[in-house]
View 1 (cartoon, helix red, strand yellow):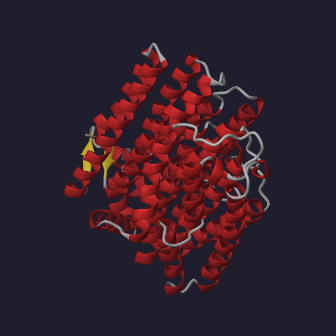
View 2 (tube, one colour):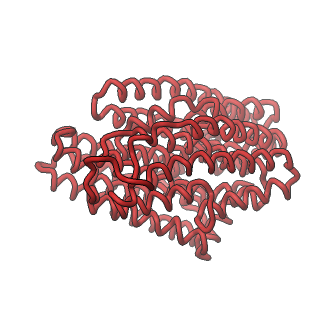
View 3 (cartoon, one colour):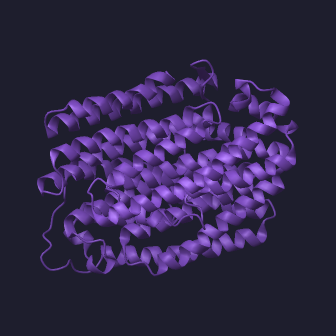
Length: 484
């Protein structure tokens, strides 16, 4: 099943390059993303029954945490491909995209999906290779329009993330060095399934150093401050469906890598060292995001800095620890993926309609684009942690964990930062959504395809704020057991 899941986007990519028309490539892409979604759901169901699946001579595996990441990638990937039909089709109709580049876009889109799925199901420290692959493919997607600003953003992304991933490689090598002392020089010394069972025997000094390298390395890719500087440029310059994947999925994949190493390092070093580092970097991410959100003039960069904030929240949740802290962090990964993708899709519709990224040049969305405007306002409330939406539940759970675990100062700072971010973020959203539309803006939506994608996501945002299905709750609790 794991092999089929990985093959689906690869085959889709190949077929996209053989398509002869826009309709053909859109149909191939949609069919492939549906197949990937269905295979991802089947894998989740299999893991739910069997707890763990090992394949391809132990090189690939899926436990509940892997299945959780696959679920996020599959859902957001499908919705992004649905959104792409309307968004990229509009770009082609208005001369911003020719068919050759459209075909390249869809091909790279599905290879990007493959790399992120591979992050979730690789059973060894070769996770580093999978995450580096995501960097290479996503950089190519960023320069799709060949604009000076997008090329500059892609280079900045490549350079900073490559430096970061080098730190992660040092951490990976140190972890392997600690493992071979116990497991010997065998392939098993690289596998998660082997490492976790003997992690308590690793040299604590080596693992402390390894975790620092891992946190800085994968933290760069996750957008944790102060290694976040690539993120606002990359997310604002990429095509909107790619921005949604970068923010909603790729950042979670990097955070997944940090959490995997956290489970190993903690068994060796104890929780205090690793948890305190995560709390420090998490609070720093929230603190740095505050002024940029308060003073932001570009709505795509606003969403990018919001991603820095939310990766910080996930890090804080893991750092607070306990059942509540880890449960809240894992739930937040899913909630952020759905909500931030919704917001980027709304921003994409606004960009196509108004042809500007400037917040002050957009107003009256609820009048000029009633459906987009309404969902954009709901998404704005949701992403800032307002009740009764999904992110409120995960943020409240993390905050409760902070107080219950004795991290009083950190919890108070966390609360202050998210209140300030709410004020700044929603002030910008309300400025865009309400008032009178700018002169020359006709009433109407951009595409039914883009609205359909937003409608799918808003169901998750609203439903998970008031009801968590028992099977989904049980899945997250199994992930909590793995991380603890």
